[in-house]
Image (cartoon, rainbow, N blue to C red; front, side, top):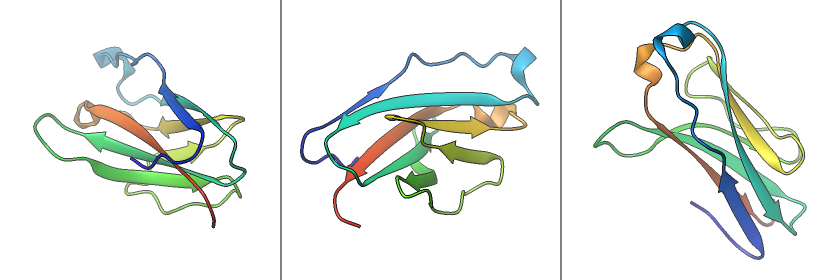
Amino acid sequence: MYLAGTSKLKSHEPKTITTKSFMFTVTLSCSYDTSSSYVRLYWYRQYLNEELHYLIYKYSGGGGGSPSDPRFQSTIPQSSTELTITGVTLSDSALYYCALRVGAQ
């Protein structure tokens, strides 16, 4: 996780995905507070007893990296980031992390 300057990252309460949610869309959110005008927000997934796996990132300029899976989309509303997973399946059961990087482009 990248943190620098006067930045603060806060994840929201985890959402429980039940079997009723499968094949639907789920959106996770994470808020941040920073004095920097340039930020990159990353999303990672971690399965039990495994390392983190990169999913997607976006930066404040509107661009971002290609998602590791086309079902993942990320947006950056004001002072937060959202990860949307479409077509949720049982294999999406994992811990999800957001990370903030601030600084020069």
